[in-house]
Length: 121
Ligand code: HEC
Image (cartoon, rainbow, N blue to C red):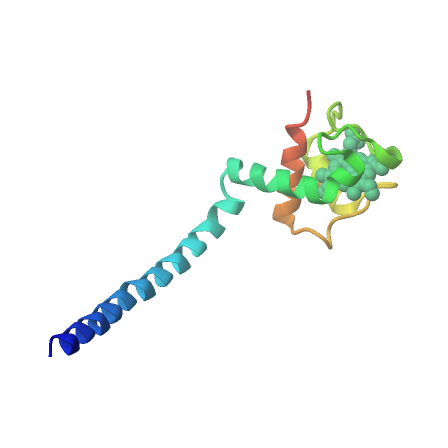
């Protein structure tokens, strides 16, 4: 008799343990929704995003620090261009530089252009 009681206790515990875990997955769903907000918002978040994008899309020609200058790419650490000019150039390209308007979103282009401003020494 004691064994059956024990077995029932184990089943009951398993059921109780099940309930909060489904509550957790509901929470993590709302956390993901929160994360998508600051990505386009605060400057710190977009710089982090910009750095990632730069490494992924720009470093092949400009180098991870902006100095590489492959195929005539300009040294971004000495570039005097404004943020607006950079956004424009990344969007539409210039000479050997490829346009990114079909590769990145407006927000991503802005983020990566902002990041290149921080490379200046
Ligand atoms: C295919 C190689 C290539 C890639 C990839 C590339 N660039 Fe360039 N970039 C160039 C070249 C070449 C130039 C010089 C264009 C010119 O003025 O003739 C340039 C120029 C620039 C300039 C202007 C600098 C100045 O002083 O005139 C900026 C800003 C820039 N690139 C940013 C970026 C960013 C941001 C990315 C990534 C989204 C990127 N580039 C990806 C080749 C590249």
